[in-house]
Length: 223
Length: 302
Image (cartoon, rainbow over all chains, first blue to last red; front, side, top):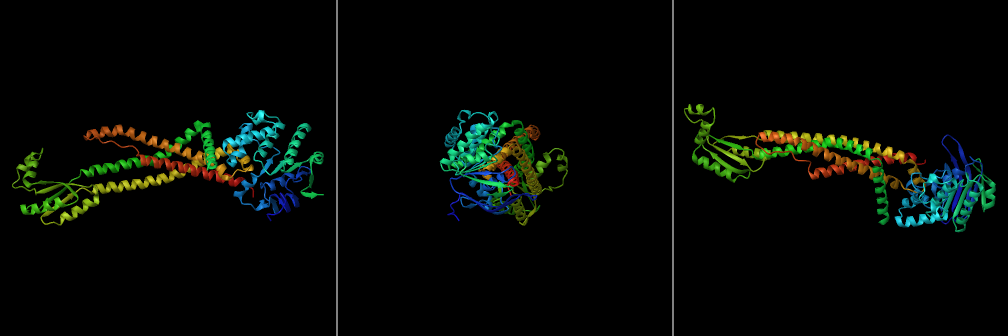
């Protein structure tokens, strides 16, 4: 099992929500380490659910989801946090904390992991620099533009130096100029070996940047 | 180790900041907890005072050993010897029949009665100052002395001391029961305060969980919060008890002065106070633990 070369592997995964809605139907695929994958499909096709299964935010109804060889659906509650520290999550709605500065938002994952303050501050500034927000570190997220908020969310996701990056519609609400800046960022992470899964409804963008595309249609994988 | 310390320090600072963010609410909660805890703590202090008052009085208690009227000086010497060797006897005073009559004659109102007596009706007696105030030891001495020849009667006022001790025990039981009940209330009060805290921190908890926070990490600042809140409540209770006792002391010293005594109530002792603080902090911690665990279980995926 553990010598599986895949970073992420789905086998015959079904996800039914309470109330009977079937979000994913019999999904099987593999993602190799270092791949940059686009997950496309209409809204409601199950892209978000798929990402949530990888991060153990949801549990599959059937089948198994392996991340680095670990079955995350059967994982003990207490070990889930350590899985998530190896993942960088970028949310559609950013999920920033508006009661603290840009800098403190990026600090949060490191504080959670128990980094000493000095190291954490150094890493946070490096992450902010990478997304071009270093000069806004004292600003509150509310004072940032939509594109800046998205970049802040990315900085928070990469500050832990995760091996896998999951992004749910990272450019969904941005104009094309901002969107391509962000896509360039993902490309640079890809070049240093990070495995990246990007959910996007934008087929064009996918065609432009992806090494491979998985297309979801009403919960099933379309060829 | 430094990792562990950094996590705890972070949580402690966060808890302190949250407490200071709402100083009025923090103060009120401390007062509520303080007043609730001051009831059992105050009762305990008063009982402690009562017990030490009992010790003080029974310490100056006397036992009288009355002899038969026909006791001869040889019998008296024998009894005196036995009493002198007895461990429970600290001081011994012999009051002869003649002395007793003389003191009766000189006492106001009874002088005439004593003079009109044909013969001295009073027996020889020993007045004992016991070495201990413990009712059981005094009882034992009485039972022993009673069986000696030429001893007519041994008078001992330990019954009231026993009653006082029993009463104090009952009071202590009641204080414990009260402490248990109000302790439960404290857990509920802190739990509820924490629940409100959680509601305002919901986003932070959710995001933290998503980016890899353990339940312990989420819980920790709330545990510090609950413990500190409990501790301030305990401190408030201590102040309430000591303030109350000081207030009572004005009246008590006046009352004692009428009896030519300098008696006054003592405050809650250090041991009791520290136990109070520890108890309050522990219950605050427990309330927080239950509250956060309940919430975390609710948001876990299934």
